[in-house]
Image 1 (tube, rainbow, N blue to C red):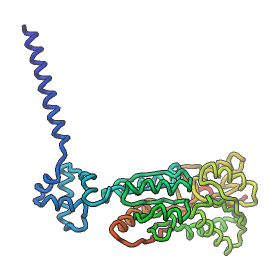
Image 2 (image 1 turned 30 degrees about the vertical axis):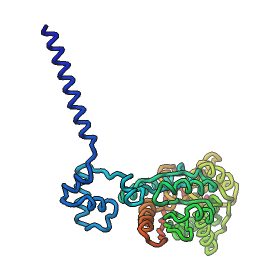
Image 3 (image 1 turned 180 degrees about the vertical axis):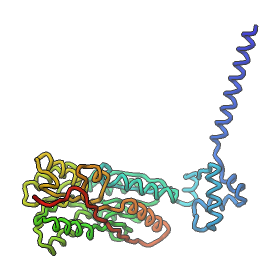
Image 4 (image 1 turned 45 degrees about the horizontal axis):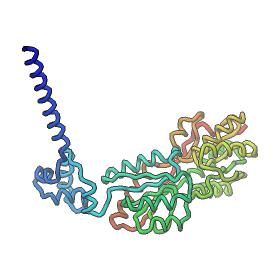
Length: 353
């Protein structure tokens, strides 16, 4: 009998415990409403809504109080409801040419962090280094986002303009008429790198060309040519290679077979491929050849020897791109902002043998 009573009590306790656990779970799952936040702040629900959807028209002190209270209460604004009220999705489209290139993941992170500050999420697409794919990807994004950030696009200007249409858009590391842009100008830093090579004693320098469709590749090549024309250095131009590790390995063969003792690679990923190709050919760096990259991605600081390169302000590129897009979404005119790269001297440049 005692066993039956104990079993019955245990069953009842288990039932009660499960019941109250379920009730607590249900309570936690209930969304805090905009009305609860309004009541806690002593304002109307419409004022709370404006603090999220149109913060610029709410008093700074009041807006901050509403946002802090909402955060403490665990309130999360319903994006679908906000979209109906404001006509916006709270989503930013981002297209990159090749997510496997180590330049782009830090840029994506910087854009995500900046977008979060304006309560937006980022929808990312990768063009896989196919210029022909970019207009179609942009067209697919347009219906799902408030605006676009297009990083280092390869497609023709006309195709990009047509694909974007009237949607607010910001381009990174390229200029497109009628669109906002933020670019990293490496001209001064590349000129400084050229002078550094010249001071080390290099008199024949190779320019390893990047993708023919890359606006940045053309700008970097122009800066290096301008430096070479003003100095007592012979510039040897070596083809157009893919912006990849394998592209760099292919370029290493051409570099090793040339009379150049130093080379500028289009970017760091290519430069690391050049270093690998030279190592396989038994050509020591920097004792026999020197190599300069561009962008200063993590790989440049972990390869041995560390890569002499031009540092791009990646975090700033992402932040400015989001700021420009926000301005465009609020009716601002297209604007172009130029940031400067800086030279980072490391272990891949030295006196020629």
